[in-house]
Length: 147
Image (tube, rainbow, N blue to C red; front, side, top):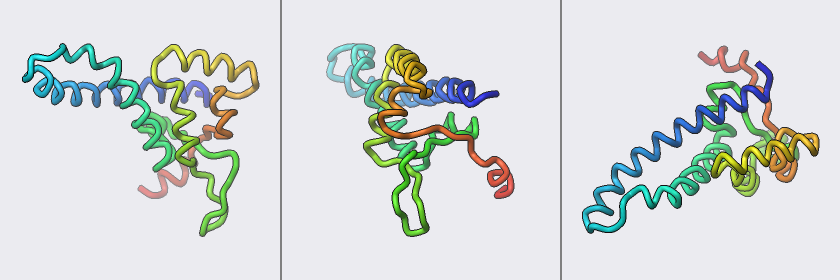
């Protein structure tokens, strides 16, 4: 499977992970919101979902360089502009890079526009070009050697 196909599968897997988080959040929020006979919980999904998606993608890509879906597909996000680290060049994402590249993932429509505009500009996604990041295949030999 090519890299673009792996990215699509990883995004679908991440959708299921975020959906599981939404079930947990909505389960606990239901007791607090309906206890006071306020609005139905489904009215809050429009506001809670983008926050969870931004947190999920930003925190995981910043901290470990990949989301759960990307890890399962053996791909990761790297900065195209290395920083100096204690052990040499550091290709990990900054917080701003991770946040900006996650903005189009809030709902399904912006990610499609992001991919179309990215293809026109020669990148996989427009926000990859703006944030100067790239998605690369992990070295699976190192992964399986650790096991």
